[in-house]
Structure formats: C-alpha cells, structure tokens
Amino acid sequence: MKNQEHTKATRYGMAIDLDKCTGCGVCVIACASENNVPVMYDESDKTRNISWMQVYILTNGSQFPHTKVIYIPRPCMQCDNPPCVPVCPATATRKDPNTGIVSQIYARCVGCRYCMAACPYHARDFNWFDPHFPEGTDRYLSPEVSPRTRGVVEKCTFCHHRLMRARTRAYREGRRDLREDEYIPACAQACPAKAITFGDLNNPGHTVSRLIKSPYVFRLLGRLGTEPKVYYISSEDWVRRMADNYLPGEFKGRG
Amino acid sequence: MIEEKNEAEAHMEPDSKRVSRSSKDGWIFFLCGLIGALIVGWIVFPALLYSKKSQPLNFSHASHGPESSAGLECEECHFFHEDGTFSGAPGITKCMECHEDPESPLGEDPEEVKLFTDYLKPGKDIPWLVYSRQPDCVYFPHIAHVKMAQIECRVCHGDFATREILPVYKVNRLTGYSIDIYGRNIAGLKKNTWDRMKMDDCAQCHRQKGKETNNACFVCHK
Image 1 (cartoon, chains in turn orange, cyan):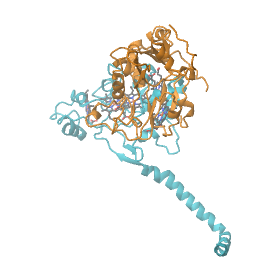
Image 2 (image 1 turned 180 degrees about the vertical axis):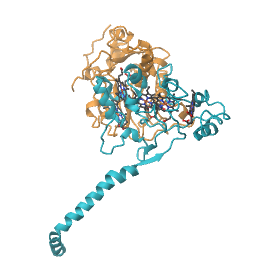
Image 3 (image 1 turned 180 degrees about the horizontal axis):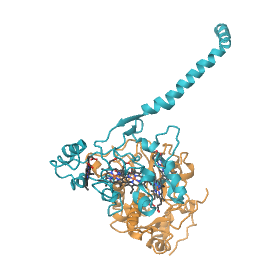
Image 4 (image 1 turned 90 degrees about the vertical axis):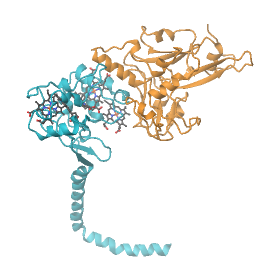
C-alpha cells in the first residue's frame, strides 16, 4: 500500500476520550439524523442495519467486583492509508489529499462490497434495501447530504458537508481559513460528555493536535499500518491492550 | 446429428453463391442502412431524447435589468444569504415590491396579468424550471465562484442578462436533467464556456484556474 501524500497541511481527525464516554449513544442518533441514515424495517437485524457511528462495549472479562466496562464510539477512521481505497474497482472511494477525509460517492458505487471486506473496522455499511423514512421523519431530511439507494455502500464522512458549509460561510466574510470551532461533525457537537474533540491534527493551535500527544493515546488496530485519524484516549491499560492484537507478554503499558 | 449438418451445408451453398454474385448491390444497401442509422443516431434520437417544457411564466431579464425601466442590479434578485448560500431565483415578495397593483400594470405584456392572477394573488411561489440544475448529489457553491474567484455569471450561464424570452426548457427523458448540463451538441463540441456543464467541464476549469485541489470527489459531491 502506497502512503498517500498530503499536499496541504490540513488533516482532519478526532480524539475520543473513553474515560469521559458514558455510552449514551447520542453520537449515534446525531449522526443518523444529520446524514439521512434510513430506518430499517427491523433495526434489531444488526447484519443489515446501517450505522455510520457505532458504540461498541468492551469489558475486561473479570468477575464482579472487578468488572470494568468501557464504550468505544466508532466512526470511520478516515485512515491515512485507507485499505478500502485501492480495492475499489470503480474509484467510488478516494482519500482527499487536502483534508485527509475518505470520500464515498454513492452514484459511482457499484455495490461490490470489496471495501467492506477490506475495512478492518466494519466502518462501512451496505444498503440491502431502498431507504425508508417513517412518515414524518422524511420532513427532517437534510438537503446537504444525498440519500443513498439500494445496492451501494455508505460510511461516515466526518460530516464533510459541514466543512463545505463552513467554507461557504467563511467566503461570505472574505476569509479562507477556518476557525477550530467552525467545522465539527455532528457526533462531536452532540456529545454531552464532550468526549469527542475534532480538529486539524496538523495545526498546533487545535486542541486535538495536543490531545493526540498524550501517553494514553492509542488507535484501533494501530499496528495494521492503516494510520487511522481517529485517536482514542484511555487511562486504563487493559483497554489499550485490547485495542490491538498483542502477543502474550508483548504489551507494554504506558503512563 | 451428422445428417443434419450435411443438410445445413447443402442449404448454405447456393446462398453464399448468391451473396457473392450481388456484392455490388450489397454496398448500396449497406450505405443506405449506414446513412439511415446515422440519421437516427444523430438527429432523430437526440430529438426524441429530450422533451420540451415551457416555463410557468416568461420572465424577461431585459425589461428588469440595469438598463431597463425597472433598473434592477442582478444582486437585488440574486444575492447571497448571511451564511454564504445563494438565493437562486427570487420569491414573489420581491416581485410584489413593484408589481403591487393588478389595476395598474407596469407594462402591456399579458404575461404580467398572468403573474398577478396565477401567483401574486393566491400567494403562490413561481415554480421556475432551472436550466443549470445539477443532480442532487452535486454541491455547487456560487460564492466560491462569484465572490472568491470573480467569475462572471455569463461564463457559466450564457447571456441571461439581456434575454427577453426565457428559452425552452429541455429535459432528458432518461435522466430527468436539463439539456444545459449535457450540452446541445450531440458530438460534444463546445463553442462557449456555458454550452455544457458536466463533471469534466467543472474539473477542466478548476484545472485551468490552478485549483486542482478542488477536484477531489467530495468537493463537488455530497
């Protein structure tokens, strides 16, 4: 896999503080309503439903009273080395070298699902059915996100339309540079615990670029070399150990 | 099986002889067919491909523009909102600023009567057909082009400012998109910058203007 170069300094990413996350699921709802994610005929069918943001539960496996539980919200990792991109036969998914965001063009997607097989994070969902919006909810659809049809793959976009909206607003004021708080995905904005911090990883002025230098930071399956731009923070050793495949005795806790 | 095959060969022999005998006439038939196919492909099919629709009302830009009696600048009807989005075509409240009294019309054109009876009185917005309407999956920000890049309206839309009659709206029967997206020339020839506005036309200008960075998929798609 070739490392895709960045032409510009901007590299959007997020840091999710698992110590703060309560697993409430507001990010999931905010994401779904922001991005016109349809409601399935049976949402309990987890092999068919669509969720760009998903909250995983992790336990340390110990007996009461030593049981510990944490929640891992999982958007698309927007990898710097996205395994989904080279496998796409239709160039429907690409990494934007200027923002680092991995795009998915639904009109181009042929639904082969190679990208889903390639993604180690299960961040991609397939539309098994035509989208369905229960009566009333169709009036809340966002015109800024195109709806998907049956037979295409979709995924989290870091709410890319919000970036375009922020740029448009900045142009109105004659600016080209965005402030840190102007472009934030819906999940980060909605999180009541403020566990999700979003910004430009390459900009030392953004909080997120400071957070990812913490010794408690890890990335999911970091050793695969996908270089995710979603960072997690946890002060618990066992969480960081479970986030990757370590051989017995190999993991060295930090901090 | 073998017998059948022999039978077939026996049938074919006189046939192939006949073809070689009349190969001169064959050329004529071939040419007729070719020309016929070309006429169908280049003239009949393109004509059938697009259905015509007329605008709900003939709005004359010439009688409202800066040099007319109405004396309006483009920005009064086509402006940017506070958040940078483009207003598009104006609503009827804008029209009512001048066309307020049905008893004393501003011009003699019967279209103005239609404007009063069909839209202004019942308070209905005019369902304009937008020539340049892109597919839903396309994101097009006017402000980046008009304000930041200082591109004139006519570069993409043609001479709307001086038009007295709105052109016929032609819609592609297969895709439902306007002919101004695909271009009027079936061979794909483009004389003016506004003749066609497909993906490649957007990207070509971005490349020419040194804005290669705008050619990532998600810049124009949503």
